[in-house]
Length: 257
Image (tube, rainbow, N blue to C red; front, side, top):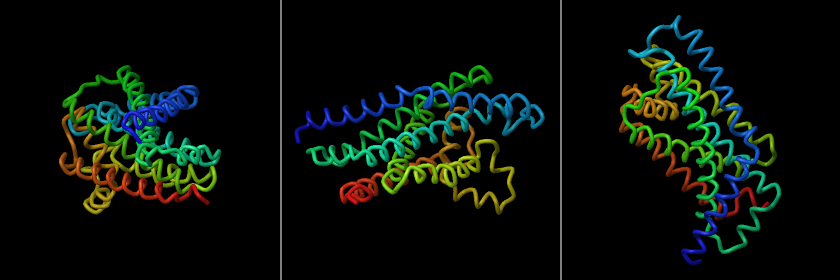
């Protein structure tokens, strides 16, 4: 397959994915904005003043990076898991597989589509955050690199969920029972320095903690976790998920049944 054909195949999948979530923007873009706005109102404006400063910053300023990244994580994951499972259910993915399109192009196409939705939601949520908080950026390269890597990681995770899912209910099991608890316990609303030593150690086993703290460093210049370690964890998980997804896609796992 020529380079030009690969490029066309890749951009065709990406265009399909982006068009899909933009066509139903009321379901894909609007709910995260409303949910995050409620977080800002309840936790930032109502509860925040009672809590006081967190790590030297106003509470609402402290939680803004985590809330933005939480929206990116959820939407990157959800877009790919639901879209790929729908392609399996409708058997349209088989039409792509019988073509000369390499598996890595299929994977990258879906992942890029998921990243596009996650990042677009992140931008919209950031605009909303400006209405509630004095949003500043300490390090734009760190902020941008962490959000891109995180969106890619969870888009890959969504693809894996789509591969393993056997019915529509399976698509929501992982976000509900695994992803959401890990996100809330990943330091979005608090610094792990407030926890007893035992629970601090337990928190270090949560990979989302490293992403949120790396992203918070990009905004505020503070982090409970070493920045280099955060990058290492995110990249390691992303590489592992990419390899697993590619292997499963090549063998037709979850598709050729």
